Length: 217
Ligand code: Z5A
Image (tube, rainbow, N blue to C red; front, side, top):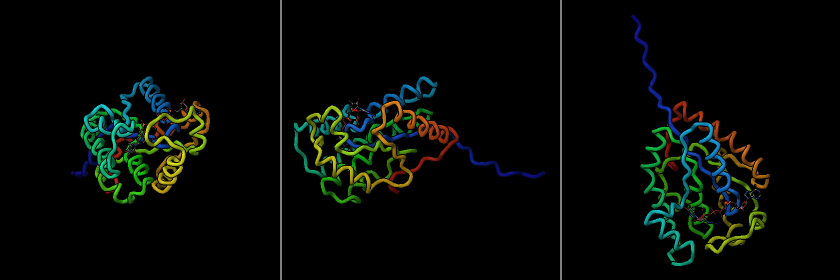
């Protein structure tokens, strides 16, 4: 009798999908559309965003962004990172239970915005090393000038054209060949169509047991 080695069991899981981009690039609109689309097609899905302003750490971040408090650049960077770490185990259990997470901003925002202030990129990455790596990063690509035309900026700390130009450069330096770069100047519907294709492919790979990996390890 021949005994075949049984292949390692691979579990189906939800996908970790991250949208990144400059302020006003359309992330929030597209995250909402993707969430509805997946839900309507019968997938377990949740919409997350960072910063998560509902936690204690998130409230400190929120008051900093609203210019109601001042913090050292490194201190606020570490708070943004802590805000992701405090959600890490919930994130993993959701994904393991089959729920796909559509996430509006993640560690790449952390590095892009802090390094745009002049902090060293490797220093910025270090506290996020070991968080779950996204299964796909979708970058909604728009020039800072075009983004600023969209209803103008609000009053938050980073919503200024000159700073957004530097952030755009930081994102470029950070992106790699695995990122899906989508032209965010197309109509909302055309952007949505492209995103659905990218997302469905990723969801299927995770249903087939794509292994987890860690960020920057
Ligand atoms: N930050 C950080 O420093 N470190 C970190 O670790 C993290 C974040 C996680 C949080 O902002 C700030 O924190 C952010 C980065 C920093 N600062 N900035 N800048 P937030 O998450 O609260 O806000 P935001 O991410 O910048 O989102 P937003 O202003 O809501 O923009 P959006 O989500 O990208 O866009 P939108 O609301 O979907 O759309 C903006 C407008 O454009 C709206 O009127 C739409 O109807 C319109 N729109 C959208 N798509 C289109 C298209 N395709 N055509 C035409 N018009 C469109």
